[in-house]
Length: 129
Image (cartoon, rainbow, N blue to C red):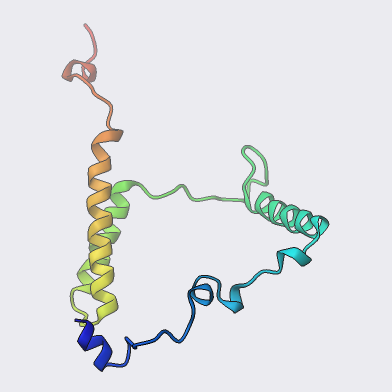
C-alpha cells in the first residue's frame, strides 16, 4: 500500500511541510497577541445578539410568524426512503456515500424510537365501566 502511494507521488521520502505547519497552517493563524479584550468582547456580544435575533421568542412575535413544527420521525423516515430510492439509480461516489450515511441515519432513528415510547396497558385504551 505504501509503495502504491509512493509511486503515485503522494508519499515522499521527506516531508515538504513541518509538523508545526501541518498543525497550525498560516491561513488559519489568528493573531491573538494583537487582539484586545475589548475587540473580543465586541465580537462575542455581536454573535450573542445575532443568536438572540434569530431565536424565536416563546409566546411573542406577530401572529403572522408561522413556524412549522419539526417533522415527525415517521416523516423523516419517509423522506429518507424517497431520497434513497433516487440515489440507488445514480452511479456516483458521492451518491454512494450519501446512501451509506442515510442508511446509518435511518438505523439510528429506528434504534431511538423504542426509547421514546411510553409503556401502556391494553386496558388504558378502554373506558372504565
